[in-house]
Image (cartoon, rainbow, N blue to C red; front, side, top):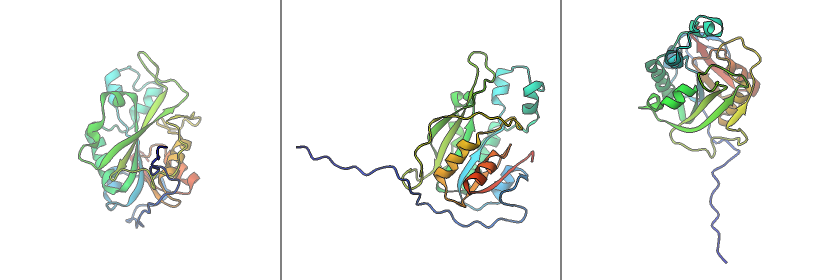
Length: 238
């Protein structure tokens, strides 16, 4: 009879990580829709203080590349009016987020098919962030496309070193293809509240701070309130 070696499990339903207490500087407020530059917010936070962050860049690469010709018209009008981020601005945000995340903390980065295919690795250059997973959000709504019509966005899951799941990621029922239809189209970049809530619950404790320095529709704020977490975030558009 062959003796089988019992390997230690890499899974755990218990989160062992405890985030430090954070005292905000004057002008910042929890669970509020702050109107300010996200880089200014990030610069006011101490190193290794935040357990989880979301970042949804207002990137315009896909519009420049495909040139559909509908900027300023219909659905393109709202997108065109947003303050856009070039690659250097996106890198600056990710570097600043890396600075404030605690060790083993997570950054959830929203990205579209264009940037996923052309490459985004250089956005993480010089940081302590490792890409550890990818979630596809099925929006159940067709968008633009010369060939296939886009119906999904992608959420890159990255973790600040040291990279580990056991004792950090405490739920294991989140599908990597997540269907969630948005019915409230008050913002052009509306994001799925339920998915973000599940991820927040997976990588934070009740009361922990969740950061979103480019909050857009403030869907992360809603997800935090639903999950008993503390939101800290802003948007330059308010």
